[in-house]
Length: 63
Image 1: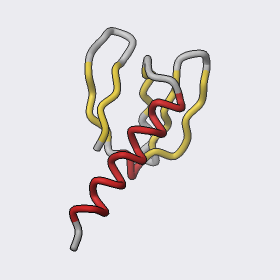
Image 2: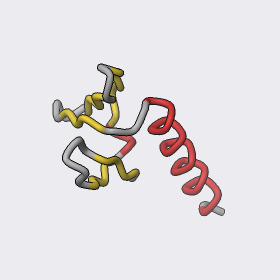
Image 3: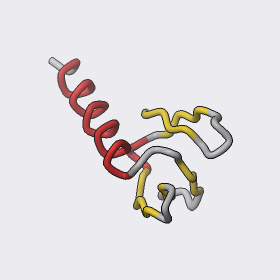
């Protein structure tokens, strides 16, 4: 799960395992496998960094 900031400054937690694609329009539009879309203030690069950090944290915790 990662946090993103919507255009109205509301923080939302999304399941990064369900991200299908991200488009820069110029804000980042995140399309989920469920069909839902989120528009985030964060850039694509920042969202990718958050996903990588989450996956690293999960993989480090599993022993």
